[in-house]
Image (cartoon, rainbow, N blue to C red; front, side, top):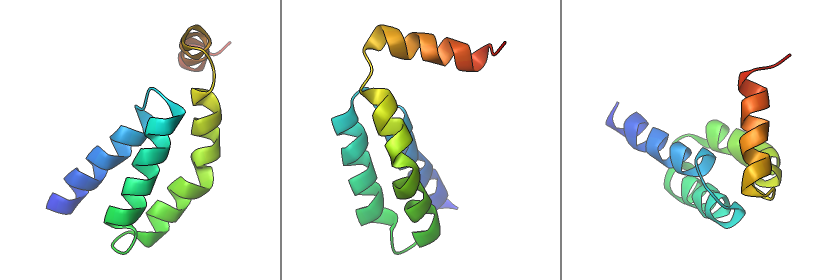
Length: 74
């Protein structure tokens, strides 16, 4: 149970990253720290990271608008 909290914190570092570089660092950290303990979950995050990394390439204003669109779909 203690591991899950620490694991969740490492996941938050990825999806709350402000830059692509920070997200990549978080994914690397996730693999190094948790890859042997939670291999399937880590693999899924690595496989799907392209979407987050693409999102982080947008300017801050565009990211803000995308977030609003996702929260308030038509």
